Length: 82
Length: 149
Image 1 (cartoon, each protein chain N blue to C red):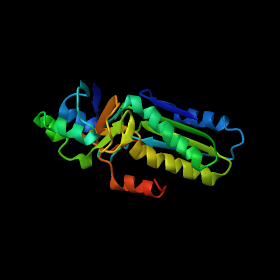
Image 2: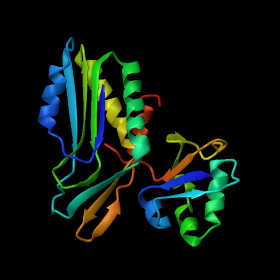
Image 3: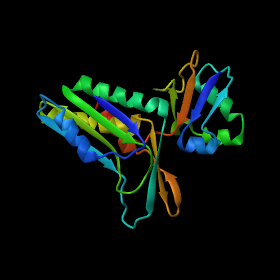
Image 4: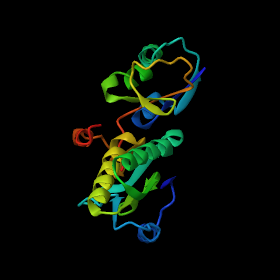
């Protein structure tokens, strides 16, 4: 089981802040493919991954990052802190 | 080093004084505050700041630790708020203390550049006509290049 979190407009588009899911995805990209295939709201949120950032176990990561042993993946737009 | 991520307002002046008083050996303190802009015309009613609770403090601590590796700093302070803020409110502050000003200035700029695009906060502007997510600017990302990422 993996915890998937969404922030900012990704959260709004999908309509929930987090969910637990069972996945066979080996990488973040494969997880994105799996989510996209689910429902139009996921497809809309993940339409352009260049507009998204990802954190794996609360560290910024790339979309080709492996998911073996990972507990938490978060998707969000580029950050606007400061 | 002190890192605070909080919804509550803080007293910027008091934090600056306390930080300065606690920096034995420092010859320079640089402080910066980020404020919710009061746009001319007054269209902005509030700024909503969302963050990633599990990751935020850790990300900021990592950025501050990197600053301490690059410059000889006596101390570093970062306070960043989340939640709903009104125009004119202080969103966040950084303070750096060093023996000489060049290091304190450089470290403060480094911290701000990284906090902008590497700390998991997202700002939403709420106006009379609706609300919009603040988009990251290319310039913010480009600002990281000068530090050699």
